[in-house]
Image 1 (cartoon, rainbow, N blue to C red):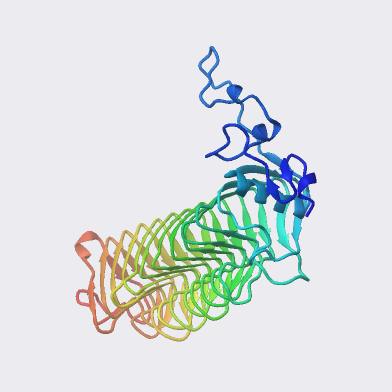
Image 2 (image 1 turned 90 degrees about the vertical axis):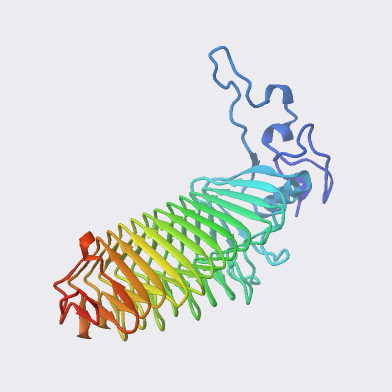
Amino acid sequence: MGLAGVTGLALGTVGVAAGPAAGALGRPLTAADDRGGDRGTQEAGKRDDRGKDSEKKPTGIPVPCDADALIAAITLANARGGAVLDLAKDCTYLLTADIDGAGLPMIVTPITLNGGKHTTIERAAAVDQFRILTVDVGGDLTLNKLTITGGQTDDEDGGGILVNAGGALTTHHTTITRNIAGGSGGGIANNGTTWVKYSTVDRNTAAEAGGGIYSTGLLEIVKSHIDNNTVTGGNGGGVSALNSTVTVKGGSISGNFADNTGGLYVSGGIGTVTGTEITGNTARSSGGGAARAENNGQLTMRHVSLTNNTASALGGALFVALDSFAVLEDSFIKNNTNTGSVGGGIYNAGETVLRRTKVNGNQADQGGGIYNEGTISLFTTKVVENIATTNGGGIFNAAGTVNLNTATGTIVIKNRPDNCVNVPGCAG
């Protein structure tokens, strides 16, 4: 792979890393180390007479626009305990060889890959199937301004990126797109810790769960867009979290598709969503077009819009299963549709609380707004202008308890053909 000739990289012999630069142990390698610069002039915290840091931010080691050069740089970084690597702008690093299931060496140290305008890492279309990156125990990978695309696995998780237990991934302003997993996690499969920040995960596909992201670890998504991903035979077209803690802040989960739960699926874990648009998602054969909590899952949503989602069974927007819990505050559940069953807006078989939330314009066969088989409590909430084909235009209470709490200002009006079925305190 031409390791010895790579620009900015120093090797003792081909395939064997030279000893780390002075002071480089225990911290990521930077360009200053590779140039042999004076460490004394690079100490953090050095200040000039005006009290400002006089040290310039270290730059990474440049990596030429060549896939072998990138492989060599990551190999050396792993050997030296980490590095900051600056990839070339207007460059596609086209990967052609499978290295233990990925196109690039497994990440086992702190490594940062800095991209720029039109910097892409891509698997070549005509080669064997492999993902782009694997982060293993001890690995801490940061991706800045990159596109990750074309990864594909036969029956394994993580079409684009796999984060194993004990590994960590952070993306900034990065796009993960058009990757395919034969297992779960078309874009990202996270079994460790992953932060997706100001990034886009779109048009990825998985066979089993998590078309965009599949997580069994700690997952935080900040001001990012998880859009237009697909699961061909499972759940969580956008995000699937299994016994995981997932936090979503801002951004969108939109246009995703799955058999079960088009948008966000939380099973046995804790999900918290704030200020996010969950819109235009589709669940083909089971409930929860937008979101679903089951297997003792806990889902809290604040300032969230669940709009224009579709399911063919049990909850056009939200599905809350038996023994699971959901809280929605200051949110909108609007214009969602259940095409073949009950609960155009919400299907609840567990425990659900709505506070200062509006449920309007939803449609289903029964329970256009809400279909309840568990316990649902409404505080300062409006259920307005929903439609049922048969009855329960606003709320259909099948077998559980509905607490309207009208003293707080909850109203159920202008629903068709009626407002409520089997709901005490609600005029039909």
